[in-house]
Amino acid sequence: MNVDIIFKIAGIGILISVLHIILKQADKEEQAQMLTLAGVVVVLIMVVQLINQLYNMVRSVFRLF
Image (cartoon, rainbow, N blue to C red; front, side):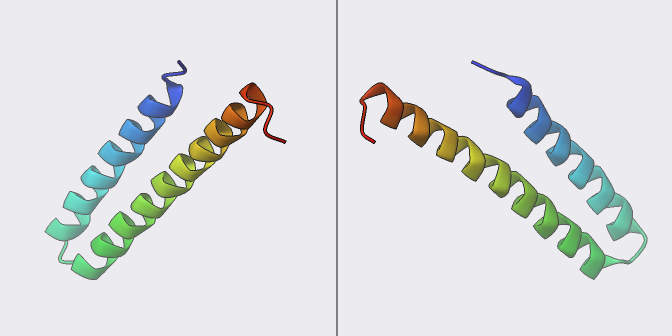
């Protein structure tokens, strides 16, 4: 199993959380929330691509063309 994707998702999560804290401290609550939402969307897109790869792999294993 490729663990690179797990590290990428964790890295994005850590970066977004640090930036959220910085923006919240600077009284930029709305921008912090938008940044968090953008991070969730990026990670969701990555997960959807992985699910698509899994689906294609299952189709090819069972020859369900």
